[in-house]
Length: 150
Image (cartoon, rainbow, N blue to C red; front, side, top):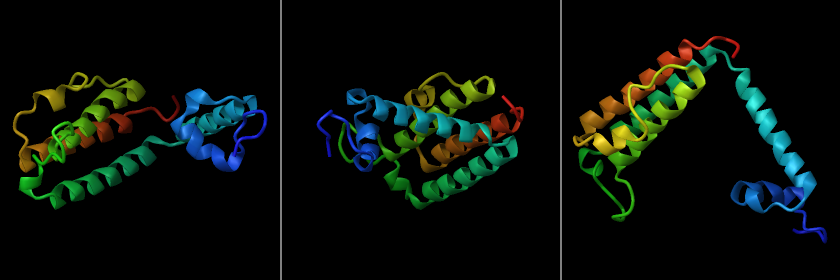
């Protein structure tokens, strides 16, 4: 619901600002968004390296179960020619880990931006699983070395 001033009321705000943050018209809405982002950022700053290792270990286990559930024949499947295959999507996920985690931990990434997705020709289940789990191991090792206070 839009008020006469063009501001969105808070019950409609969440879906709106997630989709169209560039089109907000009201100062209170912008302040609310800033407050929300600041609180989320501060809450992440409270995690210890041990907490992060535990969470990334859990994510690794879930991703491995996901990789194991996909049959070998499904790794090359593309719903449409423009979309990534399952294997490409998993490599894209791992590329993101190798790109973003070094920014937070100052640990040098062994791969360049998008390198895995572009250069991996063996997209078999065994190879993709090995690459993705190695990416999780890189993240877990990197965040484990992170000092408690950054």
